[in-house]
Length: 103
Image (cartoon, rainbow, N blue to C red; front, side, top):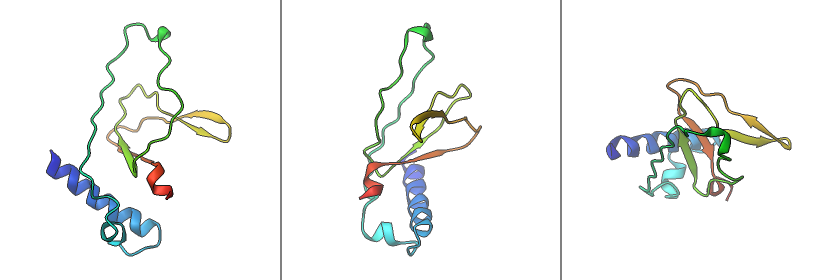
């Protein structure tokens, strides 16, 4: 599993470098994505969803976060002073740009 996650990290590093107008190896050369830290979170269905609030407003402190949503959704982003639902796309990986990308 980790071997595949490291490969995904490397491919995303190249794609992000190119999207920023840099050489494809730029982010790898400055070692900003060398961490092998991986958090896998699973949120099972709540038996009483009307009693839940979800997570508080926050930013991701990492370089980027990849998310796999289920078909129920629930992910929101704050855009133009309002919360907007992010609709799930089956089989898709969603990439959230984190705080370190802004440095």
